[in-house]
Amino acid sequence: MSITSRLRSPEEIALNAGMEVPRLLLPKADVFAEQALRLRQLAANHPMRDYLMLMAVVAEAQSAQLPTYPEPALPTAAQADTASQQGVPLLDAATWPREPFWRDQWRALMRDVLAKLPADSPARAGVSAALAVDDATLDQQAARLLTGVSLGLDMGLAPLLAAGLQLYFTRLVMATQAAMPSAFGYTQDEGRCPCCGSLPVASVTRIGGTSEGYRYLHCTLCNAEWHVVRVKCVHCSNTGSVRFRSLESVAGDAPLPSGKRPVIQAETCDTCWHYLKIMHMTQDAQVNPVADDLATLTLDLLVSDAGYARHGVNLLLLFGEPDDEGAAAPPNQGPR
Image (cartoon, rainbow, N blue to C red):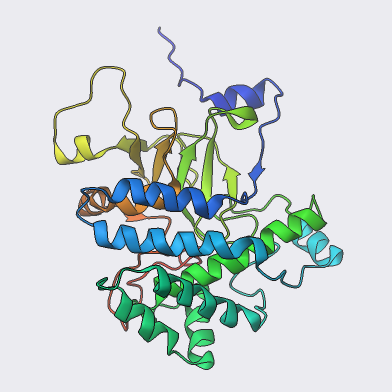
């Protein structure tokens, strides 16, 4: 009788050996600068060049604003203890109160974007229209975006609005960690950000330092990353039905050379029929979860045609009609 066993991932080997895998990677000061650079690289000769260039300008504006962004009110130690005991995100975006200054910061961000856009850019009209939106509408749209209410969500405004909310929550997470290094405890749902409770945009296999070879999920809102072992569905936690699909395998193109792994794959699960992209820095050290996700929309379309639903979301590109409930996939959509 032969005995076969599944090959263990580097994470599983490390955990079984008693090694400490970094659980949480907080956003760095250059998070938006790296994203902007990658977007400009990917935009060259890309079918979505105009949109990728717009998002590059947005990321550059975010990067310029982050160092001087006002510090939001931080959670108390009691709130951190309660969240840790309950196993829930401390700064759950669906319920965490936003201070009114976020709107002024967002408008400053949009003015910066408008100033940097070329005079003939088709995006100028949309940014100008966004700047005319009143406070009440901004708050209403932000609430819908962060709580997963697609009904009435303005799909044209949403990506621009998301850029401001990303700044707010990225700054909030960074400031909270600086004030309370142990603020973010373990949470029950590893498919959601342990800091703000949002869905991931993608996962990335990191290189360098103590995170070498480990898979991290990248938050679509606050840019935090958290460790989840590879070959495990982030939606239902199943490990036996996970498959990896790439543009080559789904589209039927010629396979890559032997031993060569695609830079970006869709990790699909045949149990719950969900998927999330995984990006391998070992194949391309410049890969960026947000930028490369936008640039590989074709993979999403092909995997969706095969019957899989996306677990994560990229707030910089939502789909559907404004009044189509469930068309978009805001950060807290999906089962808790």
